[in-house]
Amino acid sequence: MAIDPHAAPLSVAARPELTGGRRIGVLLSHGFTGSPFSMRPWGEHLAALGYAVEVPRLPGHGTSVAEANRTRWEDWYAEISRTFEKLAAENDAVVAGGLSMGGALVLRLAADQGDRLSGVMVVNPAVKTLRKDVLALPVLKHVVAAFPAIGNDIKKPGQDEHAYPKTPLKAAASMFGGYKALIPDLGRITVPLLYFRSTVDHVVDESSEPAILGGVSSADVERVSLENSYHVATIDNDADLIFEKSAEFIGRVAG
Image (cartoon, rainbow, N blue to C red):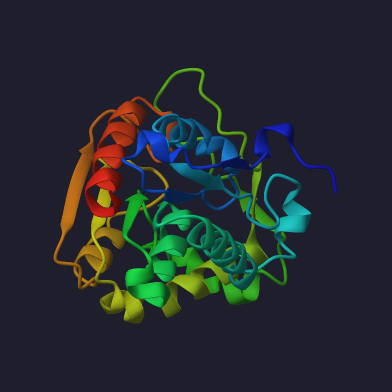
């Protein structure tokens, strides 16, 4: 299956001479129907500061809607886990970040890995939805292959995340299953959390924020409001704020 050139992963080694002699790794996960393209500028910014950066391409992404429908939450999480183990083996500390479903994946990682992870950064993360049609996904996924696209919710003119033109329903059903299993485990998360939230988001509704912020056990939680971006804020008008705040966070929790 051909891979979209925009979906190429990013992998950069640490430069400890820029980070006080410590090797610090950063894992960044893109969201559902997206690709590393939406995370690359963030990753490149952190790499320029000396951090090891890994932005993997989740299975079934950056190829086709049909292939996405053959992958599941377990496949995506396995890739995140594999990437984390690589970073953990090569660095002194690891921080993980994610956009949308990628945020849920790194929260799952934080719940599972405990203090092996130094901190978590999430941008418009999803773990719940108010959409009633999601309740029908267990049946719809056998009847309809895809729904209209959820990609490109971006305020910045001319920006394109190169996401899928449709939403694969079998994969979506698995994603919501992953969310459901994650919610009762959020209390296992104790590491510092940096939470970015767009004031206007047409993809992730207001139900996820209280579930996450009210569910985690982290004593160190910072919420940053993104006033000039929509859902894909990592490549929207507030991208620089995300980059700056995340660099400060990583330096504080892993430095």
